[in-house]
Image (cartoon, rainbow, N blue to C red):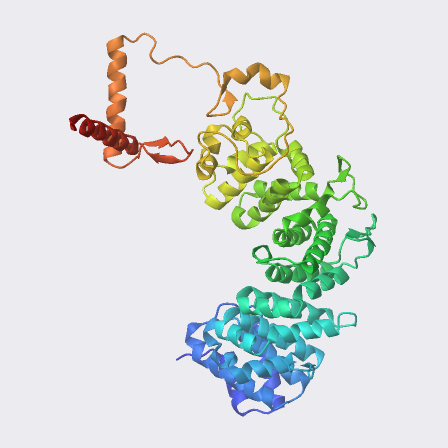
Length: 541
């Protein structure tokens, strides 16, 4: 087996070298592989041996400098899932936890390492937990998440290094994302309250009233350090609150979620040093907002929001406007719509379903009164056009979420939806709701009437309900045909459909009385059954 020189040199130094020999060899190896994420399979066994020897060296306590160098090597090697066996034993995990200052005891977290050792050990744990299910299970047994929470609590109001806090939160995010048992541990440790406090302190939030952030209108953009740290807190909070909608929420929880919703509203109004970083920051904010009970979303358009400039019916709609702009930007990007677009669509949909003022403002922006109906609903550059195009998107999740959003803005009225989208674009949603025959959804909405513009009223009778627009007059293809020719063409079409049906290329369907779709052959079967019953009864004496 061929082994690259630096790997062989590192292994030789670890197996028999002194501290003075080990450190420079490992430093060279680390420099050469600092950006290596794909490793040579031929070296697999050698890298496992290196991991094993590194753990032995770390037990010798050769000083912070050597420990940090060894941990840097472990961090590099732990990017490869195939060599993690030596690092995911119980002694190895406990050793790394001790070096990271996270060895949890019943009374406290043991802090024994110096700063650089802690940071490198935390990075190692992040990689190992991310890449190994065994390490994740051991983390539950060793209460690693509890140890992280204890340290964050201890230093909540004290000066703890940004790097250590950052990787503490990164580790907490990974653990809570990959292990549901750890989410339960975090609930016991009041993880929601702790992480909310961390986010609040990071953003230096002050309160002017209950659930009202005292915003400085001249507040500078968040620093890169603030934004990065806040995003780690938002990601961890997302995991902690992931299943909150499925659980019974008591009064204390309601207060915590409303408090968090006010902070998230403030987050939407903040900017960072760059446009891309601001979008990323808002993306994590929206993801978390999708977990918050919808009853708390009224804080997004509270009349007490400071520095708000978008007024609507006495409410400040600045945060809602930012959500709409974020949604449009993601639609225009056109890629990765399921992960990038559906969270903000879900937030806007559920908020509109619950809160009348939010729905009315969003509708005024997305579905303003119709004037020009010369073009198809999906053609154009308005928000309505872009969302209608998504109603026939290839991704079912994106298609359903966009259609549901427009349906809620129409107060779940089929007639209203068809007016803005056309039957062809809305058919999938209507079939899913069992509303192909018309009517309304199950939502409860106010009775305010939908007003039509004079321009719309003047052409309403000429609109093609399938396409949703006024079509130019088309010549009748049967003009000039004799009755025999018309009958011939009709039978030709019937035979074509019959052939497609028999070969199961298409399946003729009908709208059933309950508004759902059903095979057309059911009608024939029902007719045959009824006819037979009638014949039988006629024969009885």
